[in-house]
Image (cartoon, rainbow, N blue to C red; front, top):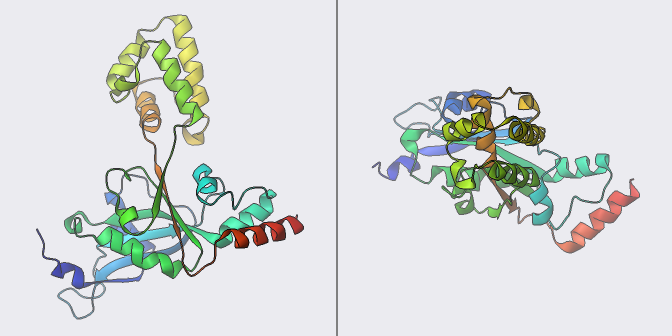
Length: 260
């Protein structure tokens, strides 16, 4: 195991897309991050064994927030609810940045660098709120160690519907981790059962526009089960330099209503 002296030789610097691309292949998602707001990278100190232009060993990507996040309303006491769309988007874009990628070179993992990278860069964004969604949050709570608060997501209605539909066809929830077995059971359904399950699967896929027309088969079953059984955790951090108390919320809400 590496000595902690390794961490002392690393500094956080303003990064660029090239820093992200160097490490993107280590991330389980695709390379799309949405509109990038800022990138920070972990690199060697100038004068250390490696030159300052050496490959990054860690990177965090901050992007502009997406408009609709259900748990955002819960975590912010409906701060962004109740406005017309244009006012709501303006408020969200002004107040929030989202961590969309956090990658550490596997050779440097286990040293607390992920938490350090988040903890030291969140204040640099100079916005009241930082948020993140992490499917691996329950397994590796580095975002909580960085100071973010976890808000576990409940199961969406679409997921409940599909799980109940599969159960009526003899496919129970504990079997959903095995796509091959689920596909074998789907292939053995009679015509009416197949029609019913197909309708529910297509209804479920309406929330995933790029894959809503996937044909039946093992590839689609793997895709559906991957989203059916994964419940990302929503994380939020309130910047202490900003007043996000109820008095400020009420003031901004009144201001927003006047602009409608």
